[in-house]
Image (cartoon, rainbow, N blue to C red; front, top):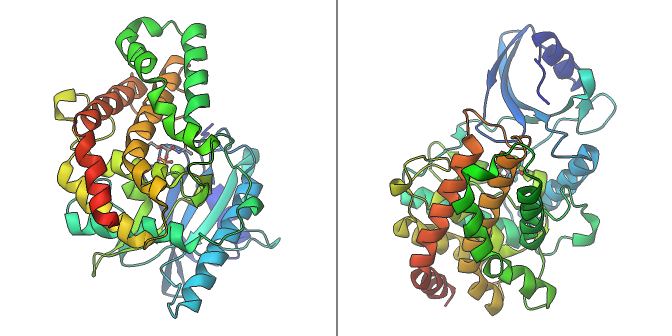
Length: 371
Ligand code: GN1
Ligand code: MG
């Protein structure tokens, strides 16, 4: 997917987005597994300005124009709600640049799909948690994100990746890949495959509750990794939710759970030493306090009860996605070393096992802050 992107191409794209410059610098800007993200610093007549330029992975996002349309609607809605509440949306909602043809994206060479937004200054993302109060603030921001979108007309959103967090389908395609085993790699992960056989039913419990109408669909973020939230350098408050590519109807518990999976783990997502991989209970509690507080009482009782399951189910779902990608030759997630997806899957399985050990605590902690 990623052919060499030249400086000339970037210059042309910047011009297409109406930017004028005497010079500019480019640096790779994110640890995301899907898109390519660059920070661009431009100078013009002695003045400096900074932007984030992204090349979208169109293997993953097959209809990027529709995705950008979703994002335009969602950012407009959030800005309007914040303004109504007397708050300034500046720095709280991403602002995408329009291209010369008036779209919030443009095409480059070889069909590359580009978008560009203003860099929010004096703020940054973190790949791991350094401070529990910052994590609590991230929780509040993700909880509040759902609240802000709670009156958004859900049926106007397209599914940017159909069935994205349908765990049942995810496991079905996983087992189909195990059967196909095109790279003869299943022999190296028999124990892991067994884990999914054992958990296949329980991992789908929330999807079943959704289908039965016990849990409501919400407009959710669907990729609530800690590094998808901007933290203000000075106040250390989470100010802006990033990476809106997968904003779609979904389960609140999966947003809660995906954040827990990433931020309340004692090790990195791809840690090879599995003895280091555990659920960090203090982080779990801090994020929960923020998230439930940020949603400000709008979750139903069934949703509150579903949160801990969301963490467990999405951890298992992602483990299956990583292992499926390993089996099919590493086509989806960017990898940086041999067997990277296998390592990621193993770490997620280990985390899921530790969540099971701490499950009563997880359920009780959510209840405590929902009172
Ligand atoms: C991907 O792009 P990034 O790194 O924020 C993935 C998520 C996974 C995550 C695991 C569109 O997110 O679903 O949870 O990697 N995004 C997509 O780190 O598949
Ligand atoms: Mg993403």
